[in-house]
Length: 97
Figure 1 (cartoon, helix red, strand yellow):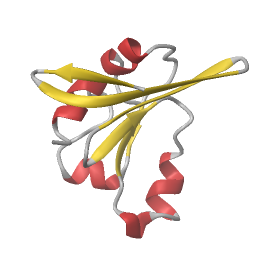
Figure 2 (tube, rainbow, N blue to C red; figure 1 turned 45 degrees about the vertical axis):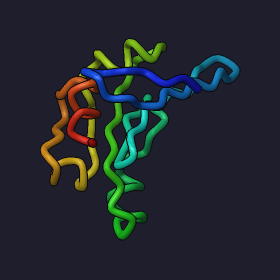
Figure 3 (cartoon, rainbow, N blue to C red; figure 1 turned 180 degrees about the horizontal axis):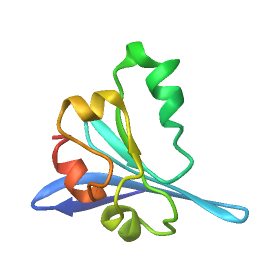
Figure 4 (cartoon, rainbow, N blue to C red; figure 1 turned 180 degrees about the vertical axis):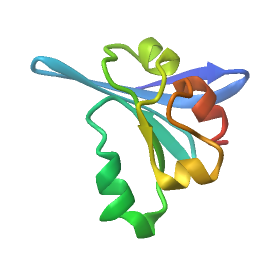
């Protein structure tokens, strides 16, 4: 777990090394972006009442890649605050402030 800075704002980056893969997420107080392990459909459907702001990037292996990758999918709540699929992870995080 490490703090990272994007345009002067601090976010928390988490990497968990697992057998044959890494789990990665970067979070703000309002939401987060995550590697391909994130299940957007679950958040939108079964956990809709929680109003989670989140985005998912696939094919990433490092936090830097997660920040620079286009988001493959985002939650409905993320869309409501202006985050869209295709947006870079770092740009999405700035909308989660």
